Image 1 (cartoon, helix red, strand yellow):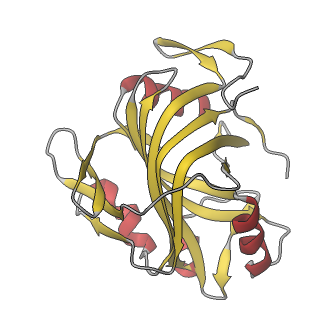
Image 2 (cartoon, rainbow, N blue to C red):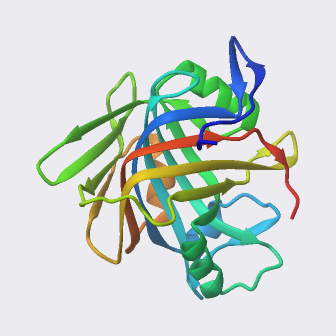
Length: 254
């Protein structure tokens, strides 16, 4: 059985038909995990059955992930995710063991706060099925000798929302290729659990090195980035070749 050999069921949302789970045979991605003041996180994190993942008594973690879906069940599109790292509410406030466990197992949990996409089908699916904070934007990629650059702009005004420059690192096939991302959206007053599984065919990861740069615009959608006051880059990953599975949402079971 290969990674993408999954049983699928037909689904419908808005004006579109698709299959679930959604399969992504070809994905390019890069991103970083930044340190953010806990006070800033608490001011915007919605109430839920979770608490911020703390790296210190005064700081939490925020992940920024840039995805280029070259091939998927709903066609090619681009997406950028901004998510606050969380853990169960019953967990201890300081999360050193939890962070170490996440790094060792490649299992990460977050609450998505911003999720621009480039196609209408990706927008409707994300909003109607998961109630993600999606909106349409112009998301483009370009490359220099040393960097791959993801730029998010308003579709009409072309005003900058955010730009992420990720260094092109030397990659290899990782010994533990699978990444598990667990998100906790809320829909109609119910907290959900949504999972994305990623198989990294080629990747590279670095810690506490200046391998990424972020530039935040003045657009209204930039406000969430500004409020989170993203600081030290704790982890950076560069994944030029991957495949992924997006599972349907389930009721949250804390």
